[in-house]
Image (cartoon, rainbow, N blue to C red; front, side, top):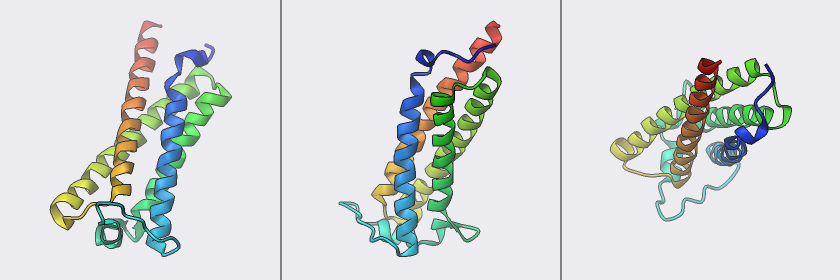
Length: 155
């Protein structure tokens, strides 16, 4: 079977752009965590306390670094779907992997946002932006997976 025509993957450039934006936010927060960049917090003002909290790391790894890896994977997957036009098997595998990674990222980001609200009582505008980006990506990848599944079932 040949790869799906690019016109039927109109969501992919959006996924690529959102993932690139998320990567930029994650790298910025990671640099802030390391002390390599000053964090500009905006009107919420909690970026520094949130980024310095014990919840900003998982097993000693900064959450922002994990986010950067996630967004990089999602961007690379979208780029392959957009530029390389892979065969259907690879396209389906990338779509499934993108769905799993984006959904896991959105759920983890929801958990971290709840920590901000109920434990830290401080909000990081960059973290909230990342939550919005990864949640939107999860919706895009979910819809793409749903389309892929319907097409496979149709034969």
